[in-house]
Length: 328
Image (cartoon, rainbow, N blue to C red):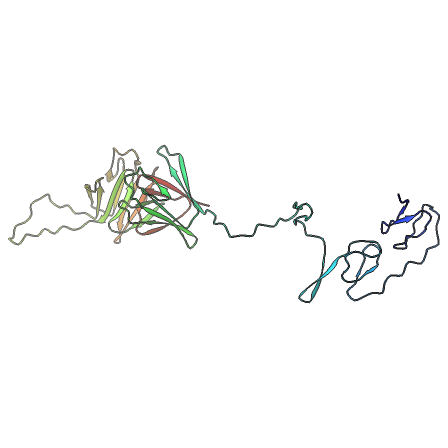
């Protein structure tokens, strides 16, 4: 076994009794008394591209990764397209090649295809008003209906097999009618304009709204007049659509505004438990039809034509299914 002293400068083993390290020339002694400073071992002449050892100062020739005097690892010059740089310590967050473990710091994310994140979802509202199942809208298009579609309600007889489509377009969510029999209804906020013949849903009542047609009391070709009830003047005509496609009550209103609700209105539906006392009003002003929700509990819905942009918190009726829109 070799016996000696370890040099404080380069960690080389020096035999007992030798005052200077044979590798780097530093003083090595157990005797604390001052000694005459010895002449350091001459280093090699500086060569272009050489690196000074950070520990003992020896010039390290290009291509050498360790100091020839003390064995310390030196920074290695690396050239990228004529620009010289030096390989230094790894940045925080890189992995250790010896163990493969991740060092503390900013981690590197996995490089791969961008994953499509869900931007919206539809939550089904149950009959008791509580939230039911949710449908995540993570693709581009999402068909809904009674048939074999992603958002399926096979037991709802008022849904067409392919009833609606929820689509992303220009960073917005739209709902499109796919030619359904019974249409798509969206809950309104405040007042919205209606096209002539537009449909309004309040409670269980589907109502078609038009400017009232003016009767023509004219005789037939023989000069005989049609005998019936006297036609009263009217501005608005609101028709009740019944299940099966029949027409129920026809309300002809003489005035610009008709209020609807369960009691105390121009038009009342006392047997409909889903209608508020004062639910909505329909107006014809300046030739423009509109409907306004009067703060009803269950809301006023309007049938859309074509496509409609949806916002966070909107409610959509498909058949007998009430869905709440949640934009992420």
